[in-house]
Amino acid sequence: MRVDLGTVSLNAIVQGEGSTVILLHGFPESSWAWRHQIPALARRFRVVAPDLRGYGESDRPAGVDAYRMAHLVDDVERLIRHFGAERAHVVGHDWGGAIAWAFAALRPRLIDRLVVMNAPHPTHFARRLFRNPRQLLRSWYMLFFQLPRLPEAFALRDPARTIARVFRGAAVDRRNFTRESLAPFVEALAEPGALTAALNYYRAAGRDMAAGRVVPLPRIDAPTMLVWARNDVALGNELTVGLEPYVANLRIEYIPRCGHFVQQEQPDRVTALLDDFLR
Image (cartoon, rainbow, N blue to C red; front, side):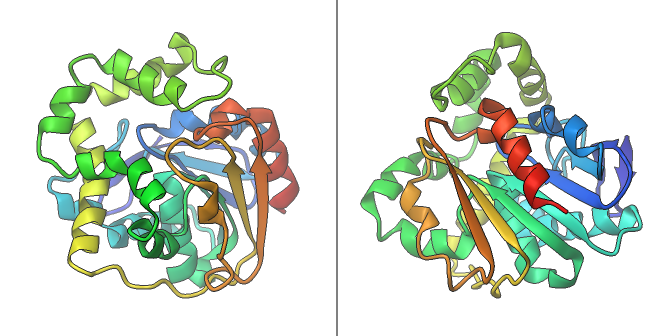
Protein backbone atom coordinates (compact mmCIF):
# COMPACT_ATOMS: atom_id res chain seq x y z
CA MET A 1 0.00 0.00 0.00
CA ARG A 2 0.97 3.64 -0.40
CA VAL A 3 1.65 5.58 2.81
CA ASP A 4 1.70 9.38 2.53
CA LEU A 5 3.94 10.79 5.26
CA GLY A 6 3.66 14.39 4.11
CA THR A 7 7.35 14.79 3.38
CA VAL A 8 7.55 11.61 1.29
CA SER A 9 5.26 8.84 0.16
CA LEU A 10 6.45 5.32 0.88
CA ASN A 11 5.40 1.99 -0.51
CA ALA A 12 4.85 -0.52 2.29
CA ILE A 13 3.71 -4.05 2.96
CA VAL A 14 1.16 -3.99 5.78
CA GLN A 15 -0.19 -7.22 7.28
CA GLY A 16 -1.78 -8.39 10.52
CA GLU A 17 -3.36 -6.75 13.54
CA GLY A 18 -2.15 -5.82 17.02
CA SER A 19 0.89 -3.93 18.25
CA THR A 20 2.91 -2.32 15.46
CA VAL A 21 6.21 -3.75 14.24
CA ILE A 22 8.23 -1.66 11.79
CA LEU A 23 10.70 -3.60 9.59
CA LEU A 24 13.48 -1.52 8.03
CA HIS A 25 15.56 -3.08 5.25
CA GLY A 26 19.11 -2.30 4.19
CA PHE A 27 21.22 -1.83 1.06
CA PRO A 28 20.60 -2.79 -1.72
CA GLU A 29 17.23 -4.22 -0.72
CA SER A 30 13.55 -3.36 -0.33
CA SER A 31 10.66 -4.60 1.80
CA TRP A 32 11.09 -7.92 -0.06
CA ALA A 33 14.04 -8.56 2.28
CA TRP A 34 11.50 -9.40 5.03
CA ARG A 35 9.43 -11.87 2.97
CA HIS A 36 10.28 -14.74 5.34
CA GLN A 37 9.44 -12.87 8.55
CA ILE A 38 6.30 -10.92 7.61
CA PRO A 39 3.78 -13.81 7.55
CA ALA A 40 4.98 -15.21 10.88
CA LEU A 41 4.99 -11.84 12.66
CA ALA A 42 1.61 -10.90 11.19
CA ARG A 43 -0.01 -13.66 13.26
CA ARG A 44 0.52 -11.50 16.37
CA PHE A 45 1.35 -8.00 15.18
CA ARG A 46 0.49 -5.34 12.65
CA VAL A 47 3.60 -5.53 10.49
CA VAL A 48 4.67 -2.49 8.47
CA ALA A 49 7.58 -3.09 6.10
CA PRO A 50 8.27 0.00 3.99
CA ASP A 51 10.54 0.50 1.04
CA LEU A 52 12.79 3.15 2.57
CA ARG A 53 12.85 6.54 0.86
CA GLY A 54 14.67 6.18 -2.45
CA TYR A 55 14.07 2.42 -2.64
CA GLY A 56 11.56 0.25 -4.47
CA GLU A 57 8.36 2.08 -5.27
CA SER A 58 8.83 4.79 -2.63
CA ASP A 59 9.54 8.43 -3.45
CA ARG A 60 13.09 9.36 -4.36
CA PRO A 61 13.83 12.89 -3.13
CA ALA A 62 16.58 14.64 -5.05
CA GLY A 63 19.94 15.47 -3.54
CA VAL A 64 22.24 13.93 -0.97
CA ASP A 65 20.92 15.93 1.97
CA ALA A 66 17.49 14.28 1.64
CA TYR A 67 19.07 11.06 2.93
CA ARG A 68 20.64 12.38 6.12
CA MET A 69 19.81 10.47 9.27
CA ALA A 70 17.48 13.16 10.65
CA HIS A 71 15.12 12.66 7.71
CA LEU A 72 15.29 8.86 7.97
CA VAL A 73 14.40 8.97 11.66
CA ASP A 74 11.53 11.34 10.91
CA ASP A 75 10.19 8.86 8.34
CA VAL A 76 9.95 6.14 11.00
CA GLU A 77 8.19 8.48 13.42
CA ARG A 78 5.70 9.53 10.75
CA LEU A 79 5.07 5.87 9.87
CA ILE A 80 4.22 5.04 13.46
CA ARG A 81 1.92 8.03 13.81
CA HIS A 82 0.28 7.32 10.44
CA PHE A 83 -0.96 3.99 11.76
CA GLY A 84 -2.21 5.54 14.99
CA ALA A 85 0.27 3.75 17.25
CA GLU A 86 1.70 5.36 20.38
CA ARG A 87 4.77 3.13 20.30
CA ALA A 88 6.20 0.44 18.06
CA HIS A 89 8.72 -2.35 17.96
CA VAL A 90 11.41 -1.37 15.44
CA VAL A 91 13.49 -3.98 13.62
CA GLY A 92 16.27 -3.01 11.23
CA HIS A 93 18.97 -4.68 9.17
CA ASP A 94 22.07 -3.02 7.67
CA TRP A 95 21.08 0.61 6.87
CA GLY A 96 17.69 -0.10 8.38
CA GLY A 97 19.57 -1.13 11.51
CA ALA A 98 21.49 2.14 11.60
CA ILE A 99 18.19 4.01 11.34
CA ALA A 100 16.71 1.81 14.07
CA TRP A 101 19.63 2.57 16.42
CA ALA A 102 19.22 6.30 15.84
CA PHE A 103 15.44 6.18 16.15
CA ALA A 104 15.56 4.36 19.49
CA ALA A 105 18.08 6.87 20.84
CA LEU A 106 16.37 10.01 19.53
CA ARG A 107 12.70 9.03 19.87
CA PRO A 108 12.68 7.01 23.13
CA ARG A 109 8.98 7.62 23.81
CA LEU A 110 8.03 5.97 20.52
CA ILE A 111 10.08 2.78 20.84
CA ASP A 112 8.89 -0.36 22.56
CA ARG A 113 11.53 -2.97 21.73
CA LEU A 114 14.48 -2.63 19.36
CA VAL A 115 16.04 -5.32 17.19
CA VAL A 116 19.10 -4.61 15.04
CA MET A 117 20.66 -7.09 12.62
CA ASN A 118 24.25 -6.75 11.40
CA ALA A 119 24.40 -3.00 11.76
CA PRO A 120 26.89 -1.41 14.16
CA HIS A 121 25.79 1.30 16.55
CA PRO A 122 26.47 4.52 14.55
CA THR A 123 28.48 6.31 17.26
CA HIS A 124 30.45 3.17 18.10
CA PHE A 125 31.18 2.57 14.40
CA ALA A 126 32.27 6.18 13.74
CA ARG A 127 34.65 6.13 16.70
CA ARG A 128 36.21 2.79 15.78
CA LEU A 129 36.36 2.97 11.98
CA PHE A 130 39.61 4.90 11.60
CA ARG A 131 41.22 3.23 14.62
CA ASN A 132 40.77 -0.25 13.18
CA PRO A 133 42.74 -0.84 9.95
CA ARG A 134 40.98 -4.16 9.35
CA GLN A 135 37.53 -2.60 9.58
CA LEU A 136 38.64 0.32 7.42
CA LEU A 137 39.71 -2.17 4.78
CA ARG A 138 36.37 -3.97 5.07
CA SER A 139 34.60 -0.63 4.58
CA TRP A 140 36.36 0.20 1.29
CA TYR A 141 33.04 0.23 -0.54
CA MET A 142 31.74 3.07 1.65
CA LEU A 143 34.63 5.21 0.44
CA PHE A 144 34.06 4.13 -3.17
CA PHE A 145 30.38 5.11 -2.89
CA GLN A 146 31.41 8.71 -2.12
CA LEU A 147 32.49 9.15 -5.73
CA PRO A 148 29.95 10.75 -8.07
CA ARG A 149 28.50 8.67 -10.93
CA LEU A 150 31.26 6.04 -11.06
CA PRO A 151 29.63 3.55 -8.64
CA GLU A 152 26.35 3.85 -10.55
CA ALA A 153 28.06 3.26 -13.90
CA PHE A 154 29.91 0.24 -12.53
CA ALA A 155 26.86 -1.39 -10.91
CA LEU A 156 24.33 -0.69 -13.65
CA ARG A 157 26.34 -2.25 -16.45
CA ASP A 158 24.71 -5.52 -15.40
CA PRO A 159 22.26 -5.11 -12.47
CA ALA A 160 21.56 -8.85 -12.23
CA ARG A 161 25.24 -9.63 -11.92
CA THR A 162 25.74 -6.85 -9.39
CA ILE A 163 22.93 -8.07 -7.15
CA ALA A 164 24.07 -11.70 -7.40
CA ARG A 165 27.62 -10.72 -6.42
CA VAL A 166 26.43 -8.64 -3.47
CA PHE A 167 24.11 -11.25 -1.97
CA ARG A 168 25.80 -14.52 -2.89
CA GLY A 169 29.25 -13.09 -2.30
CA ALA A 170 28.27 -12.22 1.26
CA ALA A 171 26.63 -15.57 2.03
CA VAL A 172 27.92 -18.74 3.63
CA ASP A 173 24.84 -20.72 2.53
CA ARG A 174 23.70 -19.47 -0.89
CA ARG A 175 20.59 -21.65 -1.24
CA ASN A 176 18.16 -18.80 -0.39
CA PHE A 177 19.73 -16.48 -2.95
CA THR A 178 18.38 -17.97 -6.13
CA ARG A 179 17.87 -15.99 -9.32
CA GLU A 180 14.13 -15.93 -8.61
CA SER A 181 14.50 -14.68 -5.03
CA LEU A 182 16.90 -11.93 -6.12
CA ALA A 183 14.83 -10.79 -9.11
CA PRO A 184 12.82 -8.15 -7.16
CA PHE A 185 16.07 -6.54 -5.98
CA VAL A 186 17.39 -6.48 -9.55
CA GLU A 187 14.21 -4.85 -10.85
CA ALA A 188 14.27 -2.24 -8.09
CA LEU A 189 17.94 -1.43 -8.63
CA ALA A 190 17.39 -0.87 -12.36
CA GLU A 191 14.66 1.76 -11.84
CA PRO A 192 15.80 5.26 -12.91
CA GLY A 193 17.44 7.07 -10.01
CA ALA A 194 17.08 4.16 -7.58
CA LEU A 195 20.76 3.33 -7.20
CA THR A 196 21.75 6.97 -6.80
CA ALA A 197 19.16 7.37 -4.06
CA ALA A 198 20.47 4.26 -2.27
CA LEU A 199 24.07 5.45 -2.53
CA ASN A 200 23.06 8.85 -1.21
CA TYR A 201 22.59 7.24 2.22
CA TYR A 202 26.34 6.57 2.25
CA ARG A 203 27.18 9.94 0.73
CA ALA A 204 25.14 11.83 3.32
CA ALA A 205 26.76 9.87 6.15
CA GLY A 206 30.20 10.40 4.63
CA ARG A 207 29.71 14.14 4.39
CA ASP A 208 28.53 14.31 7.99
CA MET A 209 31.58 12.36 9.18
CA ALA A 210 33.96 14.51 7.12
CA ALA A 211 32.39 17.69 8.50
CA GLY A 212 32.44 16.41 12.08
CA ARG A 213 28.65 16.47 12.28
CA VAL A 214 28.33 13.01 13.83
CA VAL A 215 26.67 13.79 17.16
CA PRO A 216 26.89 11.08 19.86
CA LEU A 217 23.52 9.43 20.34
CA PRO A 218 21.84 9.33 23.76
CA ARG A 219 21.92 6.00 25.56
CA ILE A 220 19.12 3.62 24.61
CA ASP A 221 17.00 2.34 27.48
CA ALA A 222 14.56 0.22 25.48
CA PRO A 223 15.04 -3.57 25.58
CA THR A 224 17.37 -4.25 22.66
CA MET A 225 18.44 -7.36 20.80
CA LEU A 226 21.41 -7.35 18.42
CA VAL A 227 21.35 -10.25 15.97
CA TRP A 228 24.79 -10.71 14.45
CA ALA A 229 25.83 -13.11 11.70
CA ARG A 230 29.36 -14.22 12.52
CA ASN A 231 30.63 -14.34 8.93
CA ASP A 232 29.83 -10.80 7.83
CA VAL A 233 32.40 -9.87 5.17
CA ALA A 234 31.84 -6.12 5.66
CA LEU A 235 31.52 -5.77 9.43
CA GLY A 236 33.82 -7.30 12.02
CA ASN A 237 32.55 -9.13 15.09
CA GLU A 238 34.54 -6.70 17.25
CA LEU A 239 31.87 -4.07 16.51
CA THR A 240 29.57 -5.96 18.88
CA VAL A 241 31.95 -5.44 21.81
CA GLY A 242 31.92 -2.39 24.07
CA LEU A 243 28.31 -1.34 23.52
CA GLU A 244 27.52 -0.81 27.20
CA PRO A 245 27.84 3.02 27.02
CA TYR A 246 25.23 3.11 24.25
CA VAL A 247 22.65 0.50 25.29
CA ALA A 248 21.37 -0.13 28.80
CA ASN A 249 19.50 -3.39 28.21
CA LEU A 250 21.22 -5.41 25.48
CA ARG A 251 20.90 -9.03 24.40
CA ILE A 252 23.25 -10.26 21.66
CA GLU A 253 22.47 -13.33 19.56
CA TYR A 254 25.28 -14.56 17.34
CA ILE A 255 24.40 -16.62 14.26
CA PRO A 256 27.29 -18.91 13.28
CA ARG A 257 28.09 -19.86 9.69
CA CYS A 258 26.00 -17.02 8.29
CA GLY A 259 26.73 -13.93 6.19
CA HIS A 260 25.58 -10.33 6.23
CA PHE A 261 22.01 -10.78 4.94
CA VAL A 262 21.10 -12.77 8.01
CA GLN A 263 17.29 -12.64 7.87
CA GLN A 264 17.37 -14.06 4.35
CA GLU A 265 20.16 -16.60 4.78
CA GLN A 266 18.89 -17.97 8.11
CA PRO A 267 15.19 -16.98 8.04
CA ASP A 268 13.87 -19.62 10.44
CA ARG A 269 16.46 -18.79 13.09
CA VAL A 270 15.85 -15.04 12.80
CA THR A 271 12.07 -15.44 12.84
CA ALA A 272 12.28 -17.57 15.98
CA LEU A 273 14.42 -14.94 17.70
CA LEU A 274 11.95 -12.20 16.78
CA ASP A 275 9.03 -14.28 17.97
CA ASP A 276 10.76 -14.83 21.29
CA PHE A 277 11.91 -11.25 21.84
CA LEU A 278 8.93 -9.19 20.67
CA ARG A 279 6.00 -9.24 23.09
